[in-house]
Image (cartoon, rainbow, N blue to C red; front, top):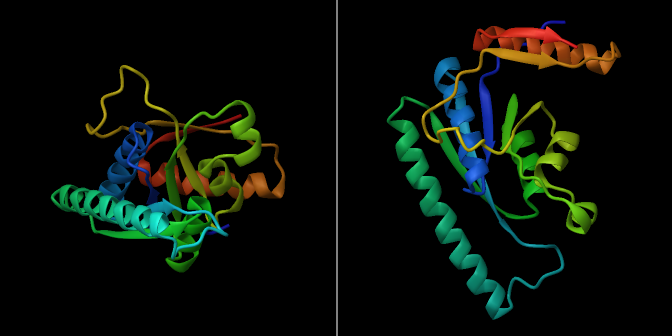
Length: 192
């Protein structure tokens, strides 16, 4: 199987602490691979809500302003590192907006932070990261919450990859992708 190099990355961010760790991964990979990076954030707005309702308009306007400013600051910061970056803001369900962006941009890899939800909220809503993993048109790198000893904003070093496999066709395809990923990252692979 011939998988082309990974050249188009999409970072899904809500500017949380966990998303900052995902940004570290995305910027490190984009810089070392010479990949284009799109950074996207979504104003969460559920279907069925009236966009014309005054309170909703105020919410959408305020959130759009906040996200646009945060994305512009991130773009300036990453541009100084020599990363080719574009930004996107969506409105709607974050997972659906991210999937649509990944499809529209023919993304090779989506990078997203995870946040552990538990209990009823998790059962009813799931998480954006889980939905992306299940439905994205490309592989997804889900970055876990940073540990207390992790330094945010200092970059990352990707040295080793664990690739679980059940030897199915889908698993073999994932293993081929992991080989390309590890090759670009100069990381070792351990199959499990």
